[in-house]
Image 1 (cartoon, rainbow, N blue to C red):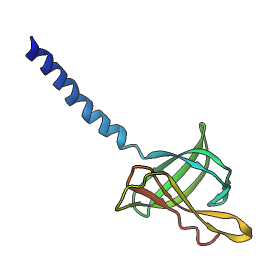
Image 2: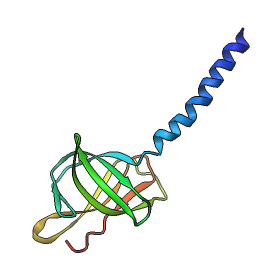
Image 3: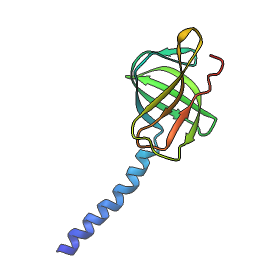
Image 4: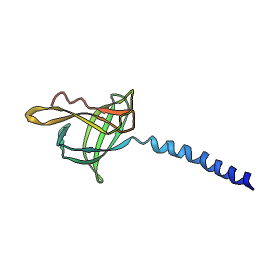
Length: 121
């Protein structure tokens, strides 16, 4: 009887692991932006956003979603960092007329980062 219980437990775990890997393959993360920042032609206000992307490498299209509404899209490069960061990092540069321009988002406990080339700003 004990053997049957262990076999049932192992079977359940074996089925759960592939499901968790499918969930991880979703290209999205949540990020908090603390200051107004320019992304493409849109200025994002401070707040919480879901960042979703499609594509890989330099052919990545990123969407910034608040609630159920996409508020901005921009091209980016998906890169893999050597080390995992311990907190979300939103990096900006000074743009024209004292605006902050989004340059990179590193995601907490992940090796992925999105790099935005907005040199024309």
